[in-house]
Length: 487
Image (cartoon, rainbow, N blue to C red):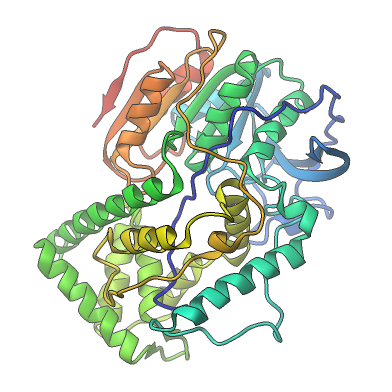
């Protein structure tokens, strides 16, 4: 980890509407088996699968041009408790996040949905238990020492090495067909394999981009579509990341205010002082990383990554406050290092890199323009910027050799498209509030706004007002609805 690393939780790019739809060939029947059987136990390394969960696969062509070569998507199904009316597909966040174990509340409004609908989770192509799997891992002989913050050539060489590793480990043919364009077609193949005449789905964060593009491409194949934590199809990568950094800055200051009010906090509610105290902690760790009694070394970048990982989840702010206090006092323990380890997800990071580059890479872009944009992105939020640089390096996708299949655009709507349902939170750092406002307006659909902090919450039990609205829509999507606020 170095100060050069730019951690962004959501890489957004949108595909040109000119792509062909997948062939009409019917996908194979899904052979569902208990997830606790020997064949699937390795899918759930963090513990046993939920009771009654079933596992299976569905195949999809690698690309429209190469239908002979296929990818295999890992699926799960939590069967309806009562008589089944259909299936609700959960489209995971990311890009790069697995989705075979959706976190749906077992009580409250979500229970009404589970009475009559199967809940379907899946790992997108290249992700988790789906195959072939994206990998960008360097071998021991290929790894080089992390450059320091002033080594611009070293940082850019590290980015080039990452590109080479992604192509080598994943395969030249495969990495070019891991983007959102293919993910949209995969979703329709999944719909057909489930035997659903029209899609009912709930999409989160990056998954909303997949859902929005599905709504453009398959407007007649939608029954009900919920989009929570909304991607703005009109934004290019640069503007999306600038707005996201501003959102994180706002969330950091709101966290600092909350942290002080609850006591035992190394920060303060006064914005400038909060940032200064945070920078003081980071500079101290930069000069001399803290080593815990168990031998774990905590760096400044570890603290930034931990902070970014927990800021989007208001319910986890107390954990973040406690961790920062322990680090500041030189008392970090295994509980703190466990949180830091949770923030690093190498497999998901590899998948995020390849999917993002497959979407938005521009090999012929003006590198001087890219450098200026990297400067603006890295300085848009001041809280992590404890070592401001005069110049920032190009990143992995800036060296990607294959053009991305993407362009920002205003949504293209068909008159056949039914009303969707958009969900947002007022202080969402990852997918800012105005994203949802713009997309709900563009898709001529109602917007549910939770007046609070956080990123995605539908059907999780966090807010019964939101969950009631979502379940009501999924059960009766044709009913007329208006915008609504939840407090």
